[in-house]
Length: 71
Image (cartoon, rainbow, N blue to C red; front, side, top):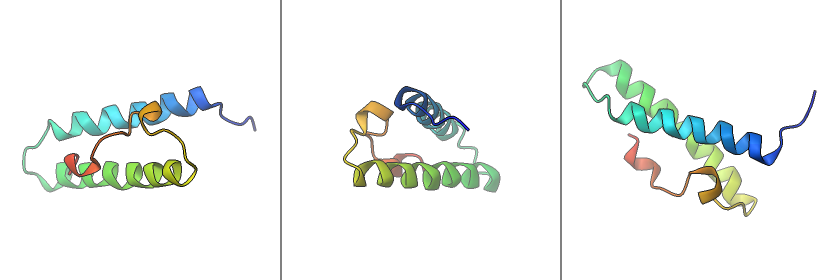
């Protein structure tokens, strides 16, 4: 299996960030939407922590914002 390049990983993470931000606009009060936003938060929190531990610039991946704004 081929390894991901940094630009490919950037693209994937930025797509997840965009989807999470879109989900915040759909606050209809349903348990489904609440769970969806929490899922995005948990995934992005893991990614953000792993990038931080490795000293990688969060802005490069679109993660230079407060994740709490998602939930």
